[in-house]
Image (cartoon, rainbow, N blue to C red; front, side):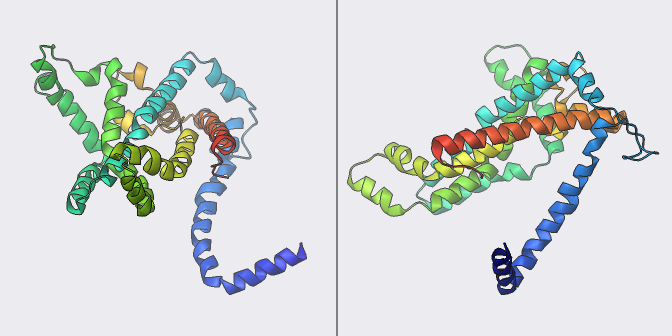
Amino acid sequence: MKTKMKKLGRDIRKNAGLYILLAIPMTWYILFKYMPMYGLQIAFRKFNPTLGITGSPWAGLTYFKQFFDSYYFKDVVWNTISLSVFTMLIGFPMPIILALLINEIKNLKFRKVIQNITYMPNFLSVVIIVSMLTLFSNADYGLFNKITGVFGMPSVDFMSKPSFFQPLYVFSNVWQFMGFNAIIYIAALSSVDQELYEAASIDGASRMQKINHISIPCIMGTILILFIMRIGSLMTVGFEKVLLMQNSVTVSASEVISTFIYKNGIQKGQFSYSTAVGMFNSVINFCLLAGANFVSKKAAKTSLW
């Protein structure tokens, strides 16, 4: 133990500058990520702001049971899972496909143009995206109804139909973030040894064969790591866009855990109840992350830890 501490001390003295740089993000994580975990005990207490966290009476699992026994529990959890899974099934492979297609473009100027076009939607705010969806979905002059009208279909206000909430959310999400998420895969593809492609060309391999047997296997480690991280956030759906798209008609199909926490914790002041729901959500995410990491480590020898 003493030997290890001496080695660590020598390493710190030798690379003092690097450790100082490391201390900055570590300090940020400790202050804003780990120290707030102290407040998680609110989920097990009948929190009263005047009494403080430790002064509030103990409530045990009362708020967890309240959420599990509520009539909206199944709907909220199902909406969260279905929306997240739908987004992952469509949104996760699209950046990979886009990166593979961009990698096949030989003209560098044209490649940059395509990258910029697909990357630009990432700079649009959620408010702008939802405003665009509202305009496009309008029953009188919306773009969507103009397109469906060509095929003789009646006009529909898509934003007021619960059945259209998830498709609108998912496909607009894919369009907005596909170019940004493809950057990681494009970077991974740029590190692939070009001699592999040259050797495949000599052997008469087609472009699709090069993609299947060289490009995809070479970035499979990156794909698996990002997939594990995506599984770890399966129960996490950002509440901003959902809340902006949500209305009294579509709430049955759009109420997810994040909006439920916002409404009960911020708007209604039920701090203990909303903390319990948030903690339940985080525990499920952690279990999914650990499970996906374990399976990937055993099956593909690739993992986060």
